Length: 348
Ligand SMILES: Nc1ncnc2c1ncn2[C@@H]1O[C@H](COP(=O)(O)OP(=O)(O)OP(=O)(O)O)[C@@H](O)[C@H]1O
Ligand SMILES: [Mg+2]
Image (tube, rainbow, N blue to C red):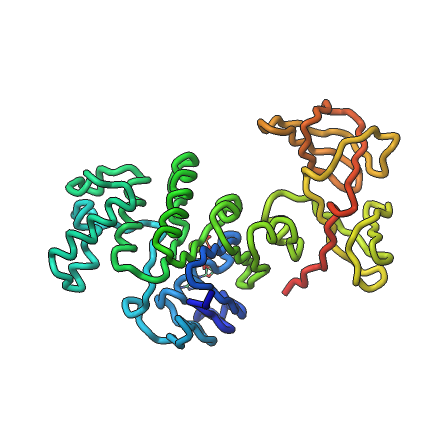
């Protein structure tokens, strides 16, 4: 697959001197579903605006289909955007909202009828043509916004938290629909969310961002199973993150005890972040365990119990199908390959 969009060493500074994007380089492949994931303020929207042409980088280059496109205005880019606030035209009906971009381009009326019809079918809004957009549900408005962005047949669609305003059930439905549309039309989608579950279920590739930097780029399974640092591990799913050190290869020390692990290549006694997922901690009898603690809280989550266990040096979060009452002293065991060792992230 070829790269459709490439960012090379993108830096964005605003007038107050704040560096919002620090040095972003990234290749997006044709027909790929790529998601920017990260906490509020990390630079996701700014990165989209760079790709869309709404903002020029302070330094660095933007490529589209191998050509440098710095300075090219948004409407000349083969890219369209669905903004977080859909910004539909309130005085126009569904049909005219979708047709708007085609009218601006002076597309012949017959062609408009055909293309708007295609879009209505695609987003499942046949029969709603004459409806005022003010009398649509949030999900329906979102569909109009998507149809309006796709009717110009961009090669790349940028979507900035497009489902943020919808309730959970509708959101899940729209996630599936968006993925279907992307695959049916063979488009490249660049999607922004701060919801890790949404990112994991929809994407081919996830770009985890924090603080104007890319933390990791990978497939959902890579990001979940092999997070490269404690930030990614913490942001993707809940994790226990403990300070530790590596006395030797495949041995890690934390909470004053030594454990077998599978990681190597650290310098002797290098301090590390030890990451253990709540579902990887097994409850065993306390007298057989290196790790023990007292159950501090138990919440039933439908499939498992979520327990906080006070281990003196660390409060552990455990997901288990086994119930233990508050106040019980329990033992905890973790398999060596479920103990993830990570280099400390250098703070800037
Ligand atoms: N025009 C601007 N001038 C100065 N600072 C800005 C400007 N636009 C954005 N910022 C700052 O840049 C940082 C990144 O903003 P951005 O909108 O890219 O974040 P985000 O990751 O999209 O966050 P959210 O999830 O809240 O939408 C924020 O700290 C924001 O305050
Ligand atoms: Mg944003």
